[in-house]
Length: 327
Ligand SMILES: [Zn+2]
Ligand SMILES: [Zn+2]
Image (cartoon, rainbow, N blue to C red; front, side, top):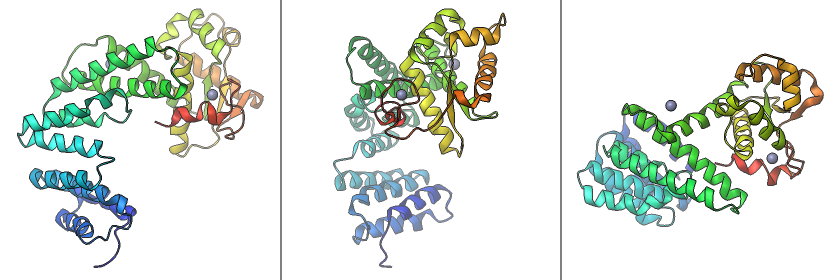
């Protein structure tokens, strides 16, 4: 047993873990490799220990899981936020409430700066601290929304990151409140609106040509003025609109969709297409189909990194919508 433990094997064990008939053997394989210095890439040492801890946690052995997580943090102090959150959660579940809450509270500012930090909330919820979780989610949303209102000159990256956090935090909060049977408040309505827009974009990919309808900036603003009811189908700003389209396309290609593209809508075109009919999401889908019948109106996605972005901004794709899909 002197083989090296590769990152692929650690990942494989991670997937197998909870369902394996012999979880103890997997834990022994991981910890053994760490003990004997057989982790192929020493940077994966913390990762191996965290996977082992997760298996123990699923098996109900919280105390041993805690010991391994603590060791993972000591091995890799640089990227320890996730490990420390897990440690905080384990301490809470072991009844060491003060220590656990202190650990998580130190990480709490991450909710306002790191789009993936929602794992902090998972730890609170899993240890029965749902009230605190809701409080933290609401406060983080307050802060981020206030920041986007007051800091007009944030970089595009910062804006994308804020949009990703607002989406993630509001969804998590909405679902938690729903489980508790709480009525919708303003942030829940926001969560619904953001979710509906993303779903709508993904739905459009289900039928027929994988072509999404998008609105160039001037058309987007005019659209909502002309048909205010469409406000429920779209996000508040054009930036969020193109971000959602880009994300939906990335998601579609990840799910194996080929021949992806976008068609640009115009208010005048939609008015002609629909005549006196009311404009609802079905009409929008039909309008998109009518545009993509004529291949000339279709822009293939993705563009080349250095080609003009599909959204019509005039910027190169790599500097425009490509980075929007990162999170
Ligand atoms: Zn809802
Ligand atoms: Zn763009």
